[in-house]
Length: 264
Image 1 (tube, rainbow, N blue to C red):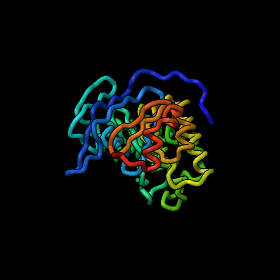
Image 2 (cartoon, rainbow, N blue to C red; image 1 turned 120 degrees about the vertical axis):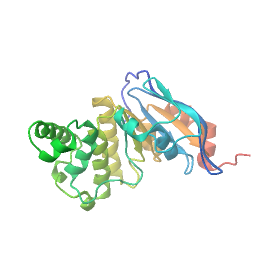
Image 3 (cartoon, rainbow, N blue to C red; image 1 turned 135 degrees about the vertical axis):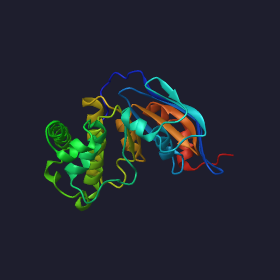
Image 4 (cartoon, rainbow, N blue to C red; image 1 turned 120 degrees about the horizontal axis):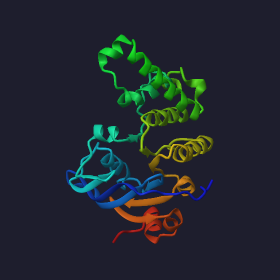
């Protein structure tokens, strides 16, 4: 499943010396790395390493006490969630966050909200320009449904879907926002082998066909080594490695972290 050689672009997002604490607990300590245009970056590490906290810092759910985030050339101490979304950062979550009583189609449509230009009154009237806009958004959502091969469940309530398909719907909702940077928090967690293979294929296709930059957290090292261009490793909130999958695979610090070797 190794990827053919592809062109990686300039730096899209840079985190510099990011530190995040909750009370007296250090979740992230002085972490720096870059995410480059059109690459797939994996962020890995043992449980409690600070991986999800780092994604939450990038898209503004957490505000670091120290450090700088530079996105599309603009530096700031912290990102705001609404600004992150408006500027092209989309996110899926470790625990699925869908509207369980709504259909697949309607869940993915919610990803288009920031793209809608007509005000609430126009939307309520559902007439004229608002109708034309609604049809255009629905067309885009239908394209995503076709891309993810979920046509058969487009009208099914997502709460009735198996776990693997719910994860695919959540990916579809994130894609509906047409992100430049897609953050995936354990997209293969809880999946069987076949579901993981499907999700890997979709992640690679999103990156290849849409040119979307992807940063993902994943525990399955086989998946990480197969689909990633670069890997950042965190342990106890600190970065211990940053390089190609092959470089990281042979890094002694990484091996020690996963084996639970003492940090004395």
